[in-house]
Image (cartoon, rainbow, N blue to C red; front, side, top):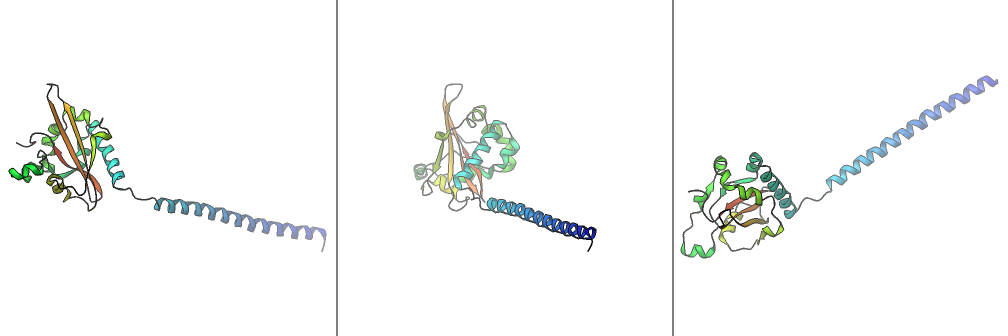
Length: 201
């Protein structure tokens, strides 16, 4: 075999080796990228679901922000209808008074009508500024009829939360308002709104 043929043979072998070697390395690199993407997806799937309190906190932050920005359309979606708007009643009151539970209920179609009565100037100021001390968690074993009625519509085992604000009006008189929130089909909603006097006449 002459020198020229020998050099051509060596060159061909080297080219084949490079081609197969490079292809193998590329395939290996692609496999590594695919594995990283697969691990990332698996990691996302393994993220734990939000617990009851975390779901409420996320909802409450949205509620405060929508009140602050006067986003009526978004706020409507955060309410559960029919909404209970009667003043809160106690078990002691039930001993001497018959409570008409249905008299304070308002439907989604009535929301716009009562919007300004619920989100007054004071309310739209106080709600976004509300702090931890303004919130309370309702005991799941409460015997208070007001909360027990609301619990009937909520997800089993979930928790009711309440926001209550007491404040002094411009006329110097003290008053208050409150909201109760509950989880329905996995999402927190406003279950009730109350103040010292009925919202509906």
